[in-house]
Length: 308
Image (cartoon, rainbow, N blue to C red; front, side, top):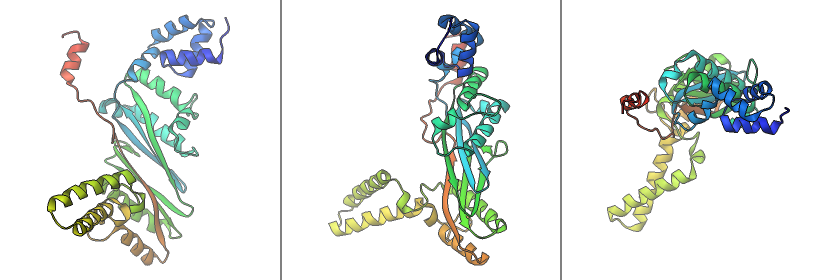
């Protein structure tokens, strides 16, 4: 019995198994769709679809640099225990390396890319879910690059080389040597990890976020009972302070808590005799923005054992 590409697609959607596993199951079943479903279920691969609905907020951030290009990738799992698994760490490391070769920050394109050793990133992810037994997701990626200069990676509290919970990349454009740019980039990366800037500069801050801050400031100003023109200045001042505190270039450098990051970069350039420009950065913190479901672990174990 023959089968088509549509059959493979439908089998993937039905079971959540990887493409190569679906093709193999259809081959072995002579194209019998239901028999292929049963075969995948017997191997445990069809259980992946059920796991995909579970919240994955743990995992690892990976960073990688090649030449003047760097990338950060976040891959989530359900528990921190899996993040310590060698198989999971190897997947994050290799997926981050694959991401270096991508032309955009499209996660779906990354998942469709070839994975070292065969298949795609998505196929390998599906296999990992089946064998490790937890939902896992390639959540996001971001690339930075320079024409001349360096991209400096930094991993705060690394779980393994270039793997951890807070990954940072700093892109410095300059004709200065790596002996100047690498240590500067490392210090700025450490600042970024600690200070959590929301954008490179004030212009890059999210417009909705600024509008929300302006609204909050206006409500506070109104409570003061001061004249309207004074309230307007209070609001403008509050928004300006928010922008200054949250844009990287205007933040006070954590190393001395008094010099703006932009000035730190400028001074380093003057000392090196070559202009240095901080053109971009990435800060990925594991699980940020994911709504975590708090669970009672003891209750989960009891439920799994049929004790309640």
